[in-house]
Amino acid sequence: MLQILQTWYQRNFSDPQAVLLVVLLLVIFGVFFVFGNMLTPVFAAIVIAYLLEWPIRQCETRRMPRVWAVLLIWLLFVILLLLLVFGLLPLLSVQLAAFIPEISTYWAKSEAFLVQWSQHYRFVSPAFIQQLISNLSEVVGTLGKNLLLGGSLKDITSGVITLIVYLVLLPLLVFFFLKDKGLILAWFGRFLPRQRALMLQVWTELDRQLGNYIRGKVWEIAIVAAATYLVFTVFGLKYAFLLAVVVGMACLIPYIGVIIVSIPVLVVAFFQFGLSGEFIWMMVLYLVIQGLDGAVLVPLMFSGVVNLHPVAIIVSVLVFGGLWGFWGVFFAIPLATLINALLHVWPQHTNLQDAAR
Image 1: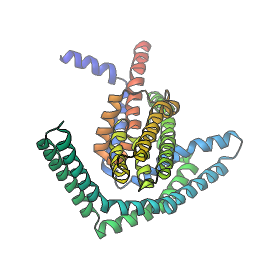
Image 2: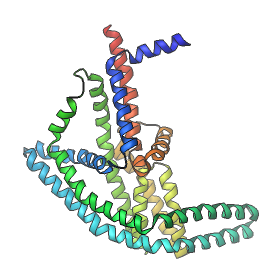
Image 3: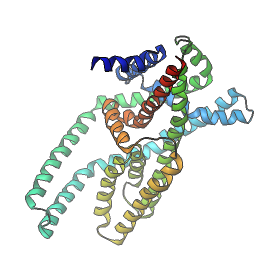
Image 4: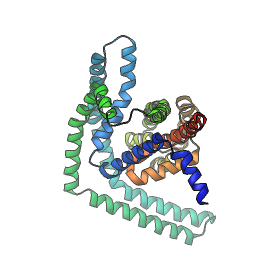
């Protein structure tokens, strides 16, 4: 057994580049884990700058100087950010403030409906329904308590300050990351050894998939949210904008997100329309949007981009979401793609090293 482990170690870690790559990845993950909350604006700015690099390259291919391309794309980004914060965010907050007090009403109606349904159809025993309601009530009560505790004046003030900091720091960080990209990369390169072929190979494999994935995911969220909002608005559904945003953001969690987000949509629509034609047609169109997203939009945008098994995607969402919350969920698939790229490149590099010997 010891001989097997020794052979495996010599095969995979005898190359100094492989050891260096492992150490570098451990340092990066350690920085994220320890300083993630403090450096969130920096990490967010790096991601945004990475996304904006693509349109800047498109401008450069049309012979626009990089300085002017950076300034143009950055100004468009700032305009979009201001539109989101001062245009869409107030509407979202108003609907959220109106929706939260009605959660207890929707819960009471759902409880009464389940009891009536169990007594009428007898498919499920009333005792089981009562136990289910009791367990769900405990969960909802805990969540409500946490929301109330989290909604103190201190936390609200802290949230406002955080928003102001983001509005000031984030655009500045993005601008400097774009403007001084070459200088920053050269500075980091000084601390890396000259022999870093394995690192460059992993980055090339990752960059090939990561940029397209993130851009595609942004477009998917926007398209699904817009289509859902249009359907909800046509039927006059309450909290249409809030629910549409939640449906769009659910695209971040493959397979699981659509199931979770469909529950509040179903509950709000059912108690607003009842078992009427409006309810049926609206839910049919909502399911059509979800079906088109999974059958058309996702294959069109992500074909050949992320070659991950559904089990790997779900596990990555659970693991990284548990570690870093929302940002962990957002970057779950990119991080899983990094691991997949590493596993894909490493054996090739090892075989080349063996052949060279």
